[in-house]
Length: 298
Image 1 (cartoon, helix red, strand yellow):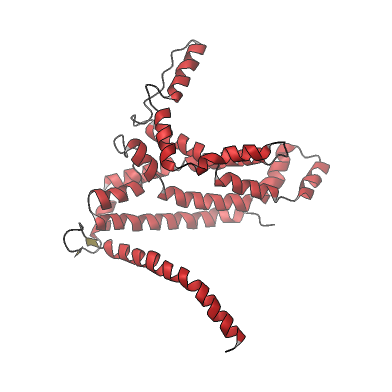
Image 2: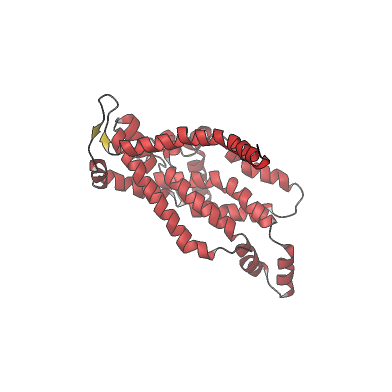
């Protein structure tokens, strides 16, 4: 047997576990969900083929569009979190004594279990004894103006902003900050030296040197965050609000869960999942088309 053949067989041997895992745990469930999207099935009786009925009913469902809007609304946390991560990374990129400690402290929320964080924020948002409303009331006393915090998680107008605030706090110091920090440390120093020779101030150096150099990282974070944003929202809504009040924090993923495991409408849940896949695919293509050209690759 030739050496090239042995190398190829060894390569296939190493690839085979991942290939089998992909076929068994990814391809088969994806194919099964596509089949389910064309049937009515309540887990108790045999599946009944209904063609495109699940999709037609879905597009006529006002709750589906409401939950799509909720999902997009909650994705307002993405640009806020990205901006916060970049600002934090710029601060963490300074050569200061003890900077490693600050980097660790800001990254800690990412390591905490999601359920614990959501329970903590439920206490923070408590209208009677929560820290946030207490701060608002104390501020009012200092200013001589009576201030009272809202019912964050039970008021339809405040439930989504409350989840956005928590999401921004959770993501600002997380992996995005690490990615930005790595990108900032990869910017060539001689570009800053040249800018200083030309008399550029701090903002001009950031806009002309730093921002173009880290644009591939920004583009990557934006792509992944939007994809994750469409798939997010289940855990915090399930634990903190139960999808309420009045469905104001129910997202598409939460709606899939309700259809599949609360109401046993497996066909409808699969149809929503495939519509969500198409939405994510189209949004990703749009991002590549409109923002891909703005990325600078040195």
